[in-house]
Image (cartoon, rainbow, N blue to C red; front, top):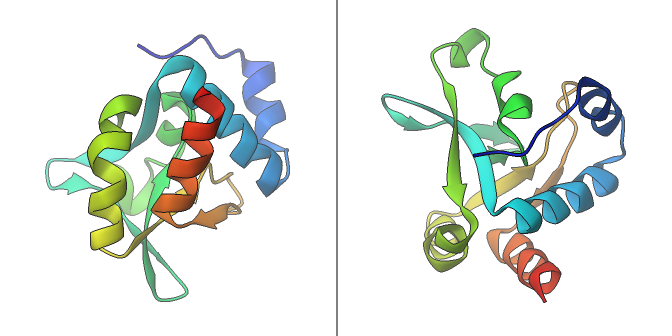
Length: 127
């Protein structure tokens, strides 16, 4: 279950810089133990950025839900427990050559990260 997110915090975090949202993502994910993305009956959604296959991730389902429009209207926020992410997802995403779009805002701005980069940041934050 996700943490409580006030409307004011929601709006304020979307105005943060890409680097600040990345750090917010790492802090919230390590604190609450969940990574959120979007999925439908066919699986997880991905997007293409500069020719790279990418998986968008958010720290809370409310942020993900805002992206469930247009081609993704049939998608729902879905979580991955942090322990499972660190155990299996980093290796799988790396093998699939999939980058991560970490906490994109509604202007489609975000940091792109290699799975290993995010893994390292999450592990460091847990220490």
